[in-house]
Amino acid sequence: MGLFSKFIAKIKGENSFSTADWQELESELLASDIGPTLTLELLEAARKVKSDNAEMALIQTLTSHLSEKSRAPITKADGITVVMVVGVNGTGKTTSVAKLAGRIKKSGALVVVAAGDTFRAAAVEQLQTWGSRIGVQVISGKANGDPASVAFDGAKRAAEMSADYLIIDTAGRLHNKSDLMNELEKVKRVVEKVSPVDEVLLTIDATTGQNGMVQAKIFSQSVQVTGIILTKLDGSARGGIALAIESELDIPIKWVGTGESESDFSPFNSEEYIKGLLS
Image (cartoon, rainbow, N blue to C red):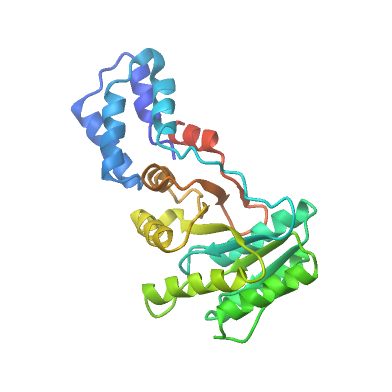
């Protein structure tokens, strides 16, 4: 990332900041997926920065645009903690379900996964493979079957096992947006006959740019999204979409995926993220 690194290096020095420099900074910000509105706000703040406190001033400005909501996973003290993972196909949703399940299991909790993306055969097979690898039971159904039925079976199995967590993968693509949102609402409604849904995590691909903001808006209007899993935040992603989503929608990013392996999944660290924008 390092969107402001050249800016800080120059403003700390003796050189003046030319019109061309400001234009370069603006172009970099826009290319980073922060979006035009936030870009203008950050440029205005940057113009007021003095050389003796350039880095600290920008840290404060950037931090002020992050959500102040808790990034901690929602966990029930008693009973099953039910987590729905939603998002469009291609955002790393199913992989994130598996990685989250693996991480929770390592903490000593008993986890059940429901393979609710029944319209994509590869998603079910992927979760079954992951389940065998990490030692987590995966509940699945027939191909193109009712996702809500699979989720319900998962909830019943989790209750029978006295599991600590049920993580539900969901469909990412149906005939149209309305169908998808209705399906997600149905899954939530059916599962809550057994146990309330405690957390809804939305997967956003960091490389999709402002399309990620569009997805976040659509899903948050239809289901109560409690947190975001930002995937593919590696060298190819500028990462500005994280700041844009938190600034505009006030949805905290809770998890970050940076690769394909189980270890490439960790809690979102806002301080490290801001430092990454500056260094």
